[in-house]
View: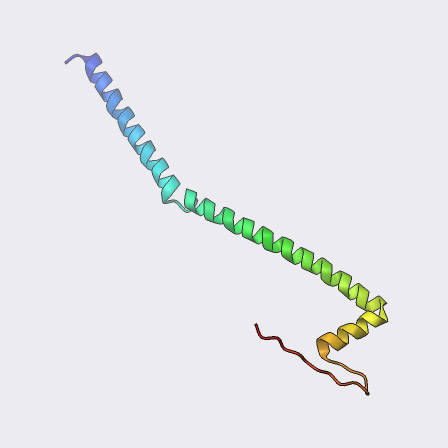
Amino acid sequence: MDKSKIKSLLIKAISNKFSISLLIFFFWLFFFDQHSIWERKEYKSKIEALSKEKEYYLTKIKKDKNRIHELKTNRENLEKFAREQYLMKKENEDIFIIIEKE
């Protein structure tokens, strides 16, 4: 064998080992690493769920702030709220609680 054939075989072997090891590395990275594709999908879905939950609570906070302001400023609404939520009544009134079965 001449030196050029040996050299070309050596280069092919090294490049094949390099490409195989590179493939193994990327395979490991995409499927088994802690930052794998599945982990990324899971994190993305968690982020989306938490974002929806955040929006829900922000709107709920806004509604509650409006309700508190309404109760602080309007005496009739405060009385209605107390009657409905805490079953408060005037002296000459009776309260009837109706529970509907589903």
